[in-house]
Length: 331
Ligand code: UFG
Image (cartoon, rainbow, N blue to C red; front, side, top):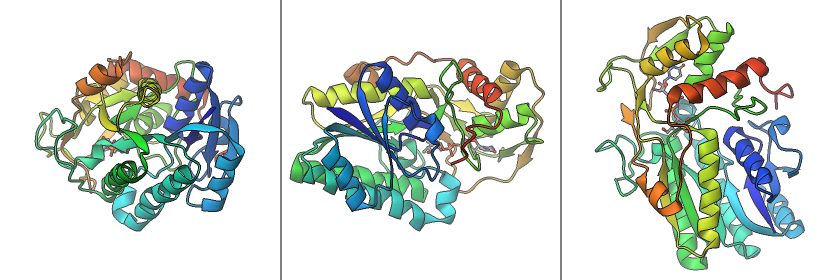
């Protein structure tokens, strides 16, 4: 029996595929390569190129393969883009989930681990954010993912499809050997953009706003290493395999770092000056997002290894230096 990884050519998906292969699992990857890279997919995994909104294609994959569980990363995830193009997000993310659950139901596949997000909480009422806190997204990306959580809930009630929703905070870093890493085109995320400035590929970092309700006025985020995240997915698969009920977990480090602190840390790690200027606020950004992640530790037994943001940046820097132009295939 194989694990089907949807979006396995993307940043987080490719690290998950790599970890699954390392732990001896058979892995099937589906990716439309709109934002993913074929070169990121571990060659021991079986690869299908296609879109999960294409029901015929998806059903063929389920027909051909013996799938035990699905891990679903295949979604658009850029907050500012979602503000400008909300329908793109509801179509691909929310619509894709419906096609996927229909195919799972038709093939009697009853387990799914799903990439949800801190963006489902919107502006938090308290920090750190608990899983039971209100989910009131302030951008279409978060709204599209919250709808996906609701759809999975009702698919569980009706069909017994069990899910684990993993609500990621800010994912960063790369496999420490620098063989796979983060490569988006165009890049919008803070850590890779800072490192592009360190590389000399960008002139400066633009810090989006310094008048937020945070200690230094810049947004505060909770950074989690991509391999710690992959480990949490493996534990979530075990949790479902053990017959447990559907559940949702935050994945973060429980420590917040401001954009200014991230810049300072990156200057330390890289030894580069990394020029930065102040720019206007970016639409859709909450002041602070910091996770309470004790539930994942207690229930799943998750033990993140990277609790130091400098170490996280260091692994991303190794990837950047080894692959100055990212994946060469540019898919
Ligand atoms: N930022 C800058 N300058 C840049 C890029 C980003 O100041 O050039 C700032 C942003 O305004 C924000 C912070 O850096 O304050 C982090 O921004 P990212 O774009 O790296 O990440 P987001 O917090 O917007 O979103 C990420 C994921 C989402 C996820 C969210 C949850 O992309 O999918 O974390 O915390 F939902």
